[in-house]
Length: 110
Length: 383
Image (cartoon, rainbow over all chains, first blue to last red; front, side, top):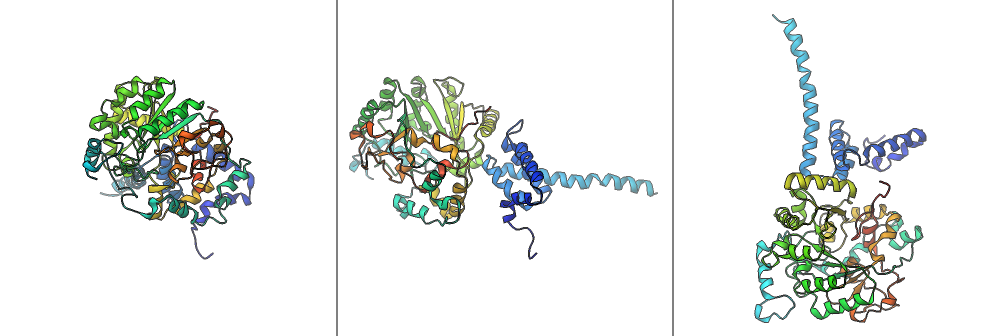
């Protein structure tokens, strides 16, 4: 393997069905159903997906949902705020563990 | 232009107002004003043909795409909508304009004789709707005459309005005029927030559009009254396809009402056509090849039956006849009984139904994704 993260893997995603077509089909059907217009609009779901893409640091997802956000009518300001939400939760997730550290230190210190 | 030498259709005083910067946001100038080679329709067609789409969907051949779904040749049905382009004059110069309209295009405006020829042609067809477009159709001095004539004939009239034109001194009474006659206003608003609206239509366009929408709301538009229909027309600010029309309608409705107290009746989402200034932007931003690939790869056979070219006839400011407004801008005239170059005054309605629609690569713009064309995307009728 000469390189990781090839851009064409995104367009060829469906090839994952090669090893197990049935599971792939179930996954893609589920995926499609998740993103259908529902209580949340397609634009709102695209913004959530963009935030999650940044949290899981998936370049394919960032690529796909930057495009989808624009397509579904999100603008740069909304998309930037979504990325900051992901960043805040990631940072907060680290920082809130600080209380465990604090408890430990309090217990062990004079 | 000197006022003394002016012998055109539009009153010199109107042009004087248009010349002032506050008459409309102008993020760019027309290709024509810049004498850009791309102002020439043949150069635009050549630029589209020059994109290498071999090995891509249908090898980039629209007729091959039609053949693949059994729809070739594309035949027109009976004319239901007469779309009249009243001219290329506009107070704005939006960056995506497929007409290359602007305040400098005052020579290309429909005169009264041609307006009357359109009305005579209308009387010879069974069209139930007259769709007025431009440029800004309201800037044509014959606009109100034409609306009144169509209303007197019992036709449904559509005004494709850029909104900011309603703020010009001479047009402040237009909302009342349109409301009293039951004219449907189809207004361009690319986004319910400022950023993407101003990116496409120029700084300040959003603010002015909201002001104009409030005026339309005040005279009864956008409140569910079938005689005061306010339709918002949306297109993406960039090289992406338009999204889910029904979903966007919910976002737009909520956003405009919450942030601005503005209401509307329905939303139509359109793809941008790779013509004129949007084509120029695609070229300059390095997006042309990718956009054409996207359009061809997104060909959706389900859009073909509802394409506007199948039930619309489009007339240009100088009275020539086309299958749609996009063909008009590319100067691809309708072929009627094997003849092109037919003037609206000589139009024989018997030659319209069943005619083969003139097609080209740009047609992929109307068949991509959920579909586009002036009627907007397909509706999911299951819900």
